[in-house]
Every structure is written in C-alpha cells, then in structure tokens.
Amino acid sequence: MGFSTDSDKNRELSEINVTPLVDVMLVLLIIFMVTAPLIQHGVKVDLPKANTTPMETKEEELILTIDKNKKLFILEHQYTFDEFTKKIAAIYKTRTKKQIFLNGDRTLPYEYVIQVMAVLKNAGFDAVGLVTEPLIVEKK
Image (cartoon, rainbow, N blue to C red; front, side, top):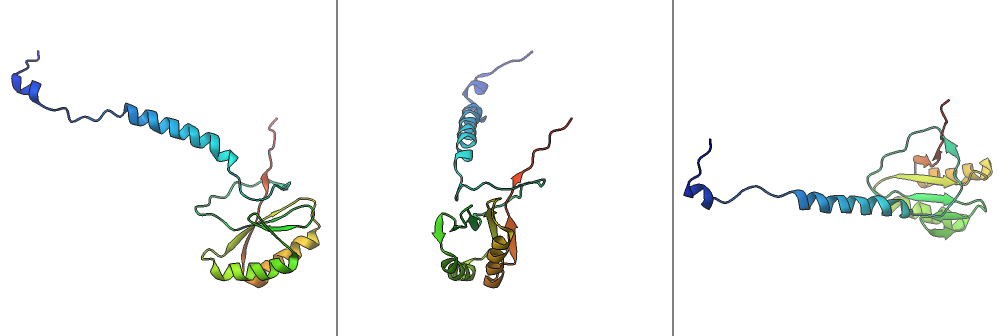
C-alpha cells in the first residue's frame, strides 16, 4: 500500500540512465575490435612458429625487422648493415626502455641473425626479444 503526496511528485529523480552510455561503449568496442587487427606496424615477414604465450606490452616497442633478403628495418625505415650499426647505437642513447624486438624471417641464415644480435649487444641492448608466431597444436 503506497501513498503518494504532492511532495513526492515535485522531487527530482537522481538516477542516471546508463542505457545510452552502454550503447555508445558497445559501438566503440566493436569499432576497436574491427580496426585493431588492421593496425600493424613494420614490414611483413614470415615469422617462425614457437609454442609460447604472447607478451604483454604497454608502450610502443622498438622493432627491428630483417626480411628474407637480409634487408634491415627499424620500424618502417630501411638501413644497410653499416647504417644500421651507427643508427642503433644512436637510438640506444635516446631510449628510456632499453629493449628491442627482432622480427626475423624464418629463412635467414643463423649466422646473419647472430651478427645482427652482436651489433645490438655492442650498442647496449641486453634485452632482445625474438618475435615468433604462435604454434597452433591440434588436440586429438
């Protein structure tokens, strides 16, 4: 049994209608889910596969890419081996996060990858991450 008085009719509602907010957030979520896979930096290479879990990162990482023709790219900029040696040393001095990720084509000779990693070590990069594609194992 509820009784209403005139004072109840004049009182303002203090509730927030969250339905429009949820609608907008869902639309934004869908937009980000569709566009995120399209935003990929760097040069396309055929990465080797490994049975590991993806690494979580918070800021944009420094990515070195070596394609199957032994061309070196820092982000999207191509360098010769000599230019790369000088450039990576200069980059190390300006970076606060002293790590680099190496995208190497699976067909590269092991010796060449080691030479590049030696240049990275001499420049000061102790944390070198080797990027791989996840290995999908089918369960029987």
